[in-house]
Image 1 (tube, helix red, strand yellow):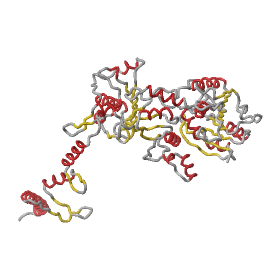
Image 2: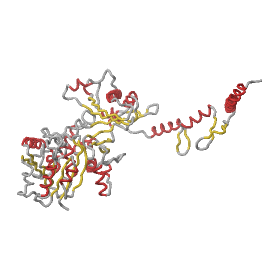
Image 3: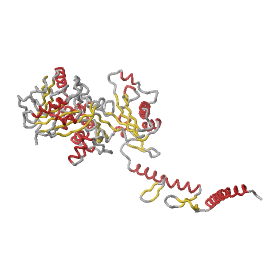
Image 4: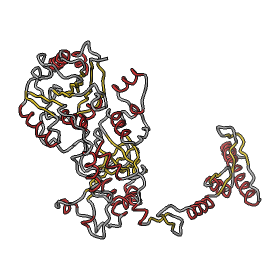
Length: 544
């Protein structure tokens, strides 16, 4: 008689043996029959209520194959037949300059390399200046693209809530720039010449692609056709090749080593151009020469997606080329340009005919204002863009500058600047002469209350804009309390002898500026960053 343990072991093992025999029987049945039979396992159901089905190995393969099929016009067509259809379509309607190899893939010819039909651009700017840049781009006849994420800053959001409307220009606030597309090299050069708020104009090398490894990054970069289209052509001579200057930023990605990313991108570009590691260009040797050409690349890696762009200018666009002598804590040219544009200067408003900066420093606001009033383009003194590429055209750049200078308006003496530092006034005169607006500005070394247009004894001209960038009390000023300075500016504005005047100030402490402007109808034009500090531009007017 078997023991109790033997009976217990038999009861526990027999169900598993029966289940294994049932699986073997089902597989034999499915393999022998023409139509696969489905055996339902009782007691186990999927979340949606359908019972789990036991299928054979052949049926699993058939299911995996069906997943790879493509649905076209409501019918199921295999992937192989879809490839044949694509090949036939490509063969019947070929693209200009593109041929097909025996495998049905596009083959690049010399004609397709030379033809660039459109140029996707991204004009970057300081955060908060996107609405002003938007107006500049639309004035040139280009249509900006709407941002994917609408990030709005506090000051501009308050103004939008006050007006109860969110304009397309306000929708770009916080995006760091505006994307748009042009159709010619001449349009790119026009952007370099006329955009005064932009800091960089980036040419997109293609759509963002996913890369989670260094070798994958190098391989995908080497397959991009952009390098053969954009880089200067060379005939096996190193001196005909441009130098690559790659800037990398990485965040939230598996590729985080910026040096390794730059190296793989450089290797991929050389592989695309047919240059091996032995034929790699010696950058130090080219930098020693005066006539070398450099292509600046910007690589941005975020969330494992890589976006490669070409900086079409050698230096940032806010470096106009005239301010070689500066004062303490100078204001950037692009910020001064946006400050005046946001204040209504040069926008066709017939109420603003004269500009005054009682704390001019190096004269940036006065020089930019005189250039805007005369119609001089901001980039007239800059070198030609697209240097080091096959798209560079120095003759076209000079032609655009000459045409723009031929449309200069005769506005006479329209700007006045003053500062108590005589050295700053000397720098202002030198900068204005280099900018070509010395006949439109008058500078004088005097105190704030002794400024001619702010003195109660002298009548100021009508339709005047008082725009200035006073010290913040953090960097150049020894006195941390700037409230007396703001109060003095407000008093001078209230006592100005004119019927129409506007006061615009760039300040770090907005609450302190509002306190000094008590009783005046003021508004925040924009908020941005300057010198690592959060600043805001405020304006108040004395007309209805």
